[in-house]
Length: 63
Image (tube, rainbow, N blue to C red; front, top):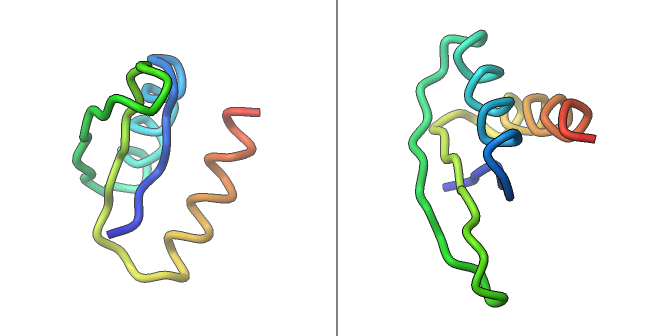
């Protein structure tokens, strides 16, 4: 399963809004990284082509 990585609440909100606009339901997993910080992994079940398209859009939105 591929996922989007959000390192703060703002990125999490951006990702979820982007997925909602595409009518894609994802699931969020909260993970503690090696530095002791919380990360959010937002997984979706789509094909590779759509994931790459969404991932490019997500990278632009969080930059």
